[in-house]
Amino acid sequence: MSCSEAYTPQLRARGYRMTPQRLAILHVLHHSAKHLSPVQVYEQARADVPSLTETTVYRTLEFLAENGLAHPAHLGNGHLVYEIAGHEHHHLKCRTCGSETEVEHALLQKLYRQLESESGYHLTDSHITFFGLCPDCQKGE
Amino acid sequence: MSCSEAYTPQLRARGYRMTPQRLAILHVLHHSAKHLSPVQVYEQARADVPSLTETTVYRTLEFLAENGLAHPAHLGNGHLVYEIAGHEHHHLKCRTCGSETEVEHALLQKLYRQLESESGYHLTDSHITFFGLCPDCQKGE
DNA sequence: TTCCTTATTGCAACTTTTTGCAATAGTATA
DNA sequence: TATACTATTGCAAAAAGTTGCAATAAGGAA
Image (cartoon, rainbow over all chains, first blue to last red; front, top):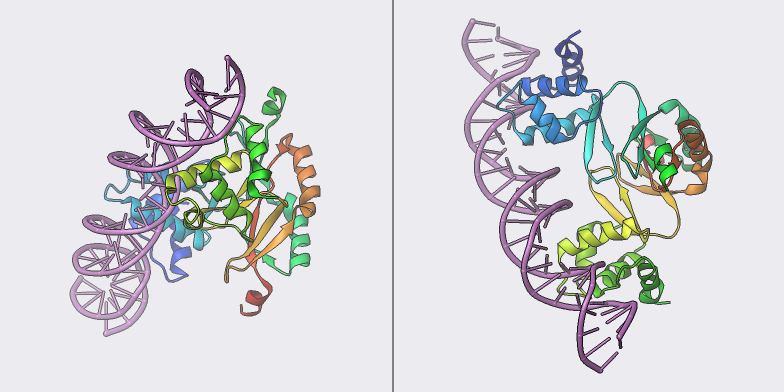
């Protein structure tokens, strides 16, 4: 299934439009294994749509995140990165070497339920980055 | 105990210096109940040290975070805020109205241990922001 | 197909954050 | 108390991210 076939109906259903810019950005996210910064998305998507501007990339990424097609993540440096929505997971990042591991959302289910019952909040978001030391960097300490 | 008495030895012990700028910034963080953005810190600390620059505030906040005197937190808009180190806690923030609740770190202990045993990582950081809907905003849905 | 509505884009100006470097100023030592 | 070492600051310029607005174009209706 093409990116267009997959995502266009999701936007239309909410009253939004599919555009070449959005399609190019979705395509980049969809075919990237990992999270990308806005600038990385811009540079890759420009291959498809040369007229693309960085402004549009920033706005589109935020738009996709609001509509559940992409997930934003903080990786600890104060900057946002994005990845295509799909499998719910969290990140575990090493403070020393920067290596990353994924954590399945299932692992946090119990905590989520506990937080919900104690706070009364209903937890909606599914991306968290945990920081620590990876096994290799612990040895070097 | 004054801010200076409390924090100067901590910096000295690591080979760093206490300066009027750092003291003013620590003072602001210390006496603020909540997390502050770099600009908020700048504006308040300037009352003490008029020559203070924003550059210095950004650098100092990062420095304090690296040395454990302050904690950075992401509150979901892509910008960092800081609060004085002291009691370990996390935030629970409402996506709709923006209201915030604190979550004791103790609640996450079990999850931390589980993540550590499954991943081999040693988790060091103690601030996470969870997002959801507060009780009031759930009613309005 | 053509028209019309309005969501979306690009531009330009602006705000926020970062970086390099020379000048300044803590603080350990004599 | 004076000296020297170097951590820290401020400045200026660059990079990153945001905003307002007029022009453009997606896509439903005729």
